[in-house]
Amino acid sequence: MGSIIHFEEIDSTNNYLKERCASLPHGTIVTADRQTAGRGRFSRKWESQTGGLYFSVLIKPQHTHFWPNFTQLMGLSLCRAIEKLFPNTYLKWPNDVLADGKKLCGILSEGVLAGGRLEGMIIGTGVNVGQRTMPPVGQPATSLYMLGVQTDKHLLMQDIMHYFWQDYPAVEQQGFAAICGPYKKRFPFIGKDITVKNGEKPLFGTVRDVSERGTLLLATASGQEEIYIGDLIV
Ligand code: BTN
Image (cartoon, rainbow, N blue to C red; front, side, top):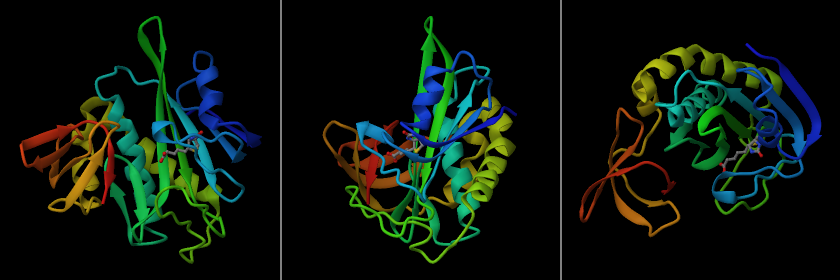
């Protein structure tokens, strides 16, 4: 299922795959020990010093119907692998992984378009593994080391990817519905009051559910809203 390309240092593993999307096969993985220009969601910087796990996977789905759901599949795969090491690990919609209430992993997915069609999708994942401290990143963050867990980051990536490829065919056929049950089991915010930010005005409400499409259903003062993208502030 594609090869693994490793760098000691790179600007961003996502950039590497974006620039070579046409020539590399489905399933190619790029990893790096550190990134000099690691990127996060909403144009944020992703701190990428030595000790963390940084990798990107190139996928070329047969069709585009369910492409946002592959990011949620990666979130679930991260959670499944990490909860075996640290049980209080859970998902914050759409795809952050928190441990003890602090951010442990992040995912940045990017589509590559060619001639008006989606040529590939890059799922870039950062896991705070061996960092002794975490620089301030706008929200509380932690690492496995800070949580008292010492692990081999290469074995951890193998385990994450095992879960990812295991459910990939089902998500490609059915989308989020294929993983809705296990995802919701790890999403402890149903019934909680939260704020969603997606660049526009923040929305306040109570989380009702995650739909079979993977969207967030939020009860607000003006009725139920279906949220497709955003950042949950809890
Ligand atoms: C987030 O904002 O939470 C997403 C962070 C994603 C970081 C990863 S690290 C590997 C890949 N390369 C990047 O430049 N970003 C992603």
